[in-house]
Image (cartoon, rainbow, N blue to C red; front, side, top):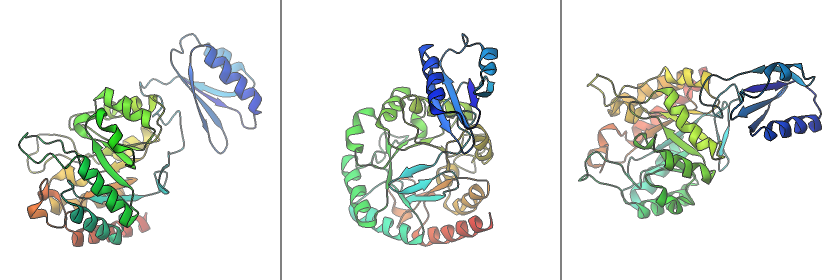
Amino acid sequence: MVAVLKPGIPQEKIDNLIDWFKSRSLDVHVSKGQYHTILGLIGDTSSIDIDLLRSLDIIESVMRISEPFKSANRKFHPESTVIDINGIKLGGGHFQIIAGPCSVESKEQIVGIAQSAKAAGATLLRGGAFKPRTSPYDFQGLKAEGIEFLLEAKKQTGMPIVTEIMNANHLPLFEDVDVIQVGARNMQNFELLKEVGKTKKPVLLKRGLANTLQELLMSAEYIMSEGNPNVMLCERGIRTFETYTRNTLDLSAIPLLKDLTHLPVVVDPSHATGIARLVKPMAMAAVAAGADAVMIEVHNDPQHALSDGQQSVTPAEFTDIAQRIKKIREVL
């Protein structure tokens, strides 16, 4: 349930109303906009008399929320969320480019790519230290050492780092990581989501390869229910009957999510297509469709990459993509 308060209501009256809601075993999410304060009620609201609420002199309107996701719902929080990542803002009109290799392979590799990506326009560095692979015989990442190399790249470039977590037991290793990525395979690992939610760190939540948008939003709800509002939703392609691409990039998810939620939307055209030459047009399309950020895999030597080299662009190709994105942003 959502209660919209009239403008100019004294804080004392608002606090009294919030206390009354809490006495009915409801959690209250307060969203203060430019003109209105909105109280989002989370819990069993069946005992609340909606007509009684509407009769209060401080209430402008009341509505019940039919969607199962509450904290992530734009009706609870009409203004778009802006996430601050070490001074870099993402969402609510603040656009960013996240770039870096699929896997961290060495200190020299990640530092070199970070420097070239930053020079081209990237503002956040991505790199996999823990790598979920379909085959147990494929490269699984450098793990703790990989995070150390990412932190070294951060030290040399000043770029916040984004890396994927596989297990809640690894959280102590992520203490200095700026954005925790929850991959598509773990989108419905609910125990992991709750533990990540307790960290209060920004979280990049990837859509599962066969999950609906509502399921994605419910996974975000798990993180937010633990008190962490800093969630970014990542569209990375879904599995369809098409075989020419690794996945099918669902561009319609961008405007749909913008309607449904206040959370920022990130698009990963690299995993979506699995083909390096398709990354540029899909990144441009994502920006035109309203994405708050794109995440692009960049490798200094894609042919010899230890993972996903076929979908990685070179630093020179990334520079061209970043320039084209800038032009599209200027037009928009």
